[in-house]
Image 1 (tube, rainbow, N blue to C red):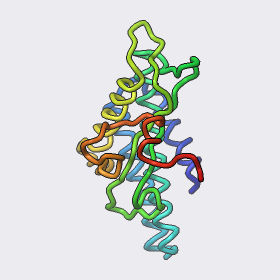
Image 2 (cartoon, rainbow, N blue to C red; image 1 turned 90 degrees about the horizontal axis):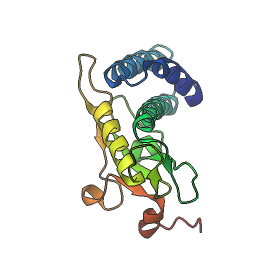
Image 3 (tube, rainbow, N blue to C red; image 1 turned 60 degrees about the horizontal axis):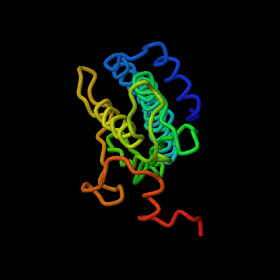
Length: 188
């Protein structure tokens, strides 16, 4: 199944939930179980190629990440306003998949290696403001909690953040401008 189709299906289930993070976690866990069963059927019964299976497992993780970020971002925007860059443009947040996730090589029990990054320093435009760093740091913490919390439906993913610049000693989220200090992002 295409990644975009997975994201559309997840968002159709999450969008009506408003700010109920507990229900969102249950929706994501049920979705993961259903899709994992579909993937396992292709693996065991239809004997699909290993590359197709690992790609599907990776697309599922990526779609779950996107759905969770959309849900949590909306919740945080409703509370703090839209994070804005220096020219008033909305600041964006991205998750970079590293390791097996980035290589589309996840297996059924893989953890996910991620780096959280946002594009501009600035502040939110709500009645109560936060810096963009505070906004995205809280978003990332809530995302990790949502992904790693264990419920009666299990845990979505184990999350490994040690591959971020500076490892476990580094900030949870990093501004793209700061990332330039760690990586050559010039495209050369």
